[in-house]
Amino acid sequence: MSLLEIDNASVFYEDFQALYDLSLKVEEGEIFACIGANGAGKSTLLRTISGVLVPRMGRILFDGQSIDHMPPHKRVELGISMVPEGRRVFPSLSVHENLQIGAWRSRKGPWSTDAVYDMFPLLQPLRKRQASGLSGGEQQALAIGRSLMSNPRLILMDEVSLGLAPVVIKRIYDAFPKLLSSGCTILVVEQDVQHVLTVANHVACFLEGRIALEGEPKDLTTDQITAAYFGV
Amino acid sequence: MDWINAAVQGILLGGLYALFATGLALVFGTMRLVNLAHGDLTVLPAYVALMLVNAFRFNPFYSIPITMVVMFVVGYLLQRGLLNLIVGKGDVAGVIVTFGLSIVIQNALLLAFTANSQGLDAGTVENLSIKVNDRLAIGWLPLIIFLMSLVVITGLQMFLSRTKMGRGFRAISDDTDAARLMGINTKHVWAIAMGVALGIVAIGGVMMGIRTTFDPLLGTQRLIYAFEAVIIGGMGSGWGTLLGGVILGLSQTLGAQAFGSAWSILVGHVVFVAILAFRPQGLLAKTVTT
Image (tube, rainbow over all chains, first blue to last red; front, side, top):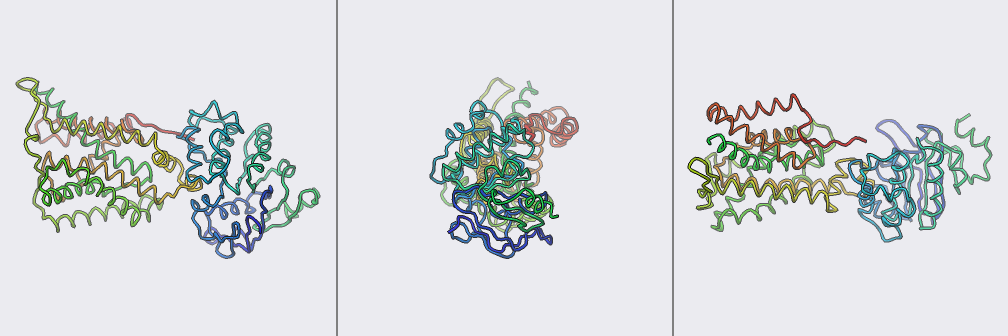
């Protein structure tokens, strides 16, 4: 059984259809990457999995259980955690308080504030600082740490490299093996293909609300990916 | 000496306004809801206390904890049953629904208790005062009310900064959608916030009922005072709200001292408008930018 199974999901914003009969399976313990251009439906997919959007048709199964109409906070309890696009840390809360909010309905597991500070040592000296005063990279590390605090089984990462310096992006991707070994499955959405293909086990290329190409990175050629990405 | 007396009375009165304003600010801060029924929800606890006093024949001070619990439950249910439907749906929906709620509460109180003025009799404490000299006396009751408002505002600040639920209030206030993604059930937390706000207001409502008389239509005036105290002090600051209440109270009593008691309320409003014009963010505003 797959950890996450999406079955013919169609998702709309009012009258605009953003995903068309989309199906995919994410297996436990893998890094699943969704790539594609702006507006291809990648972020819509993550919002649907986290419960912000509800599919008009189709089903979502998490660990075999249907979660189509479950509100977001219940999904966190089941072990789905989101690193939202644009980081969305709580600006008036301190770094430490942001992490504590991440543990609002924490499941049992290895993650604690100390474990997060171990993984991202740059956050340790900032723990009392207001999150609004952090740099983009620090905020992104905080956003990832915050979502780990719920001890998720599936972590959804939306454009984690957006607007960050290459050295910071590398530091974030370097943390992925640690997340996997803690029992996390990672579903990552990226526009920047280069980095994500080096770490992903499975890649799905989105084009206009559909998956245009899917498979293991090593089986896909650059030409295939380029064609699927731009739809040429 | 009359001026000093007026100033002391004004500061003490300000504590009461701050109590009303704190509830209003908490609700606006956590859910961006402009609650036009807030004034009537400060009148309601006085009637709850009146019913308790009539039933059990005890001193109205003893009714305060029970009234707080009652108002917490009222706030929780009101939020879950009605107000959650309009949070985040824009200012207009909130204003219309809470305006309607205000009319419903006023008329329900009129039906149940008539338009006659009522009072809560706390016995001799109402007339005791600390006599500083011949022309200056500080009433025990206004002093107790002021000290209670200090305790309540300190307690609320500690609740917001130290407890898990307080942290949740602040997270929701910062970014509601992100808070939901972190596992916070916003509907439940909003309802707790409304419950806490009305629990605080219950103290002010009962104390006001002991200090003066009250009737079902008093809410509108209190709503304006609460708004003014919040705006003078600045959003998101507990001590700012206290300062706002004190400035409003001072303006009223000093205005009465200067121009006669008929001018009291008008002077309060004029000072408010002046502060709004020259420092619209409030005196102690705490703003956070992303």
